[in-house]
Image 1 (cartoon, helix red, strand yellow):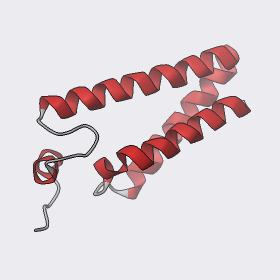
Image 2: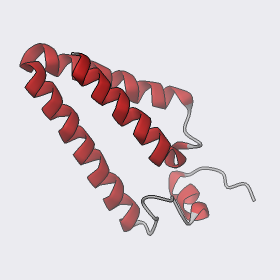
Image 3: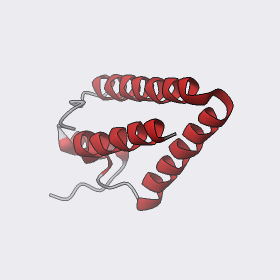
Amino acid sequence: MELELITLYGTHLLGIAIFGKFEVESPWWRWMLKWAIMMSLTYGFYYFFGHVGSMTFLIAALALSLTVHFWWCKRHGIDPIRATPRKKYYELRAWTWKE
């Protein structure tokens, strides 16, 4: 289970460092809910399918989330790495833009 947790924590850390700017205005409980769901699913896959199933789930979840992220951003004219133009991104997320 250590390998899965290290992978999960490492992915989370990289995700925050690279894509954290996309969640600046999100409420704290949303981040915690995502984290709790990912941990629960990882433990569940480990319990039922062992190391291979758990790692497969983590890799598939990462690939799926990146695919959806890049598709959604490109579809709406947002740079998927820089979250620019920022004002347009805020409008899409229904956040208040502060001039």
